[in-house]
Length: 284
Image 1 (tube, rainbow, N blue to C red):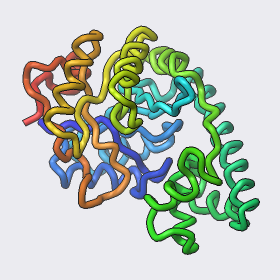
Image 2 (image 1 turned 60 degrees about the horizontal axis):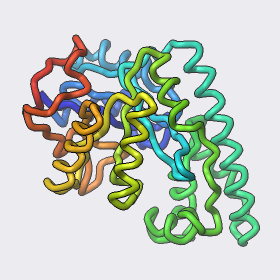
Image 3 (image 1 turned 45 degrees about the horizontal axis):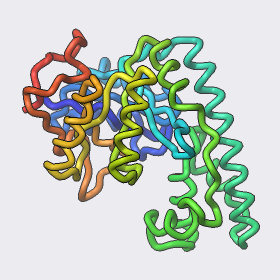
């Protein structure tokens, strides 16, 4: 059983359509896939339609990834098994989308001030109605020759303290947990090692996430070391959180793909253990 509970489509900053993403998951022998686009559930219906029409052997888990603020850090919380038709959730995500647009306007203004004009129209065209993210800015800046790679864009323009960086204006992370749970979902702390926190601050993040009512933590992502996996499992156990796994897939790369290296031992309580659509057994 191969499970991947974190992935993106072109409805946010992924490169595949919902239909192509679920097809890729089947090619990769993934049995259950969560689509977790940034602050939107727009791709879920199309993904399920493709699964139904093509009779794909894949269980779709309705999800979303909400950008939040904690201690002046941008922290992402994945909502799994949500009701994507929940009116309250949809209205709250609409607020997030407006915040995204306002942040994009300010990023474009700062880049224009530094002799990189006309960024916003190009970024909006690139997003094509999807949730606007810094990844769209990075792709555009690479396209116009401002940097050789998306990594370099963040180092030169979009990272904290750089000319195009705009502090986030996202919802408080405790509030986002409530949004997810109000939509009958479970709240998962996404990719905790990507925030580059030291040990003290990582422990504080996990502790406060649990205190705020969070349910689970992504303990397995591609490229983690065995030591990192054990440490995250121990943190989850310490704070009564279940374990989730996710590739955070946006596009195929040499280091990442759907379902890649997402293995849990059979003694770790999983976030999906009580879900009827997924067997409780570990991935093999």
